[in-house]
Length: 266
Image 1: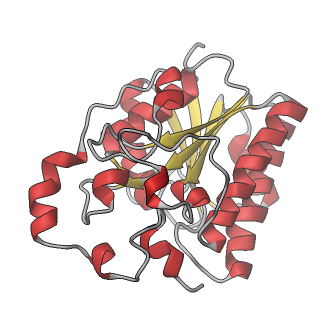
Image 2: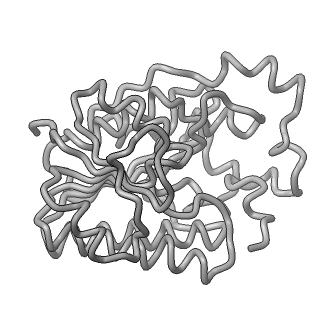
Image 3: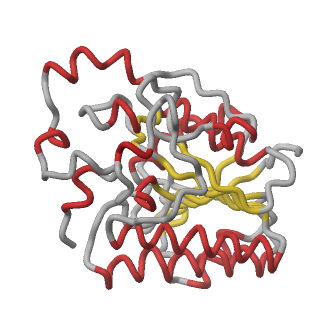
């Protein structure tokens, strides 16, 4: 597929959004930025809520693809998750359909399967994309909804969609769990680029993590898109195992893929 030229990046002021707006232009994309708060250093960014249908339609109009990162990125009360992650994502897909945009890359999450036991995924037998959904939070439930919505819009309206079950995207891993789940910012940009350019994706779900020695999830579907991860969290292992991070101290859920998320209360 010819690479899209103009891409709407929602959630551009957020953690992953900031990392992607710094890296995606290097792949030749012209970014249109969207967030409910002002984007630092980007006076032309659209400042609006996903629930503002008029602003959202205007932001989507004329772009070649959308990378949808906007929403609440951790556990929260259901009413908040409902508006930001469920209703907001539906509004985004409706705007895409109405404006004739042909591709959406949706930021899903590993927390769609967070209650899966750890022994179900290991470097020798990585967890497949088709494993039963077991969300660990309302946040995880919202990402299950987003994947289902992406599938519906692919089948019913012909919008090519890729759902990225992102692990832990940060400059460096900070706890033992992240030695398995880390997605480096550079690898995240590589994955988004692959998702934007792979041909005939229909609706595809892939895990998003780097080439971690301790990785839990099957990267074959992501590699099939053309993703070639280059980073490995293992280079940080000695420091992290010597100095346990906050995620290693929280909750009794070490036996589950979702880690301390399985213990969080909204």
